[in-house]
Length: 147
Image (cartoon, rainbow, N blue to C red; front, top):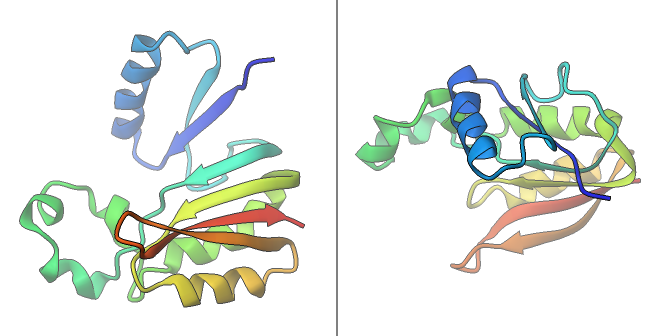
């Protein structure tokens, strides 16, 4: 069987772009687009959840490159004073939307690996399988399984 995909975003304009891409690639019968804040109204359970959450601390805003700071939506970048506000919610809410032994994969910011590991370790419903490094060999993605 072919995979079905539910893609969500908090910003409706992002889903307009996604809809064009879905149509262009001929996969509209297999992709459902939903305006949602994480898992609200998305459904499930899912075998795989992949998330690119905002993870930049608000205090880092002045140091961002102008093309990022001035043109990317703030909701796509910033997540509270430490950058972990959305990741905290993600770790808390994901188990209810994951199938048994389902996988959660998400990106996080450089230097956040210890905090992310602690959040996952504190969850009775999740098991950290690995942290994956980016091309500069910096931990930037968590691969987690529902226990």
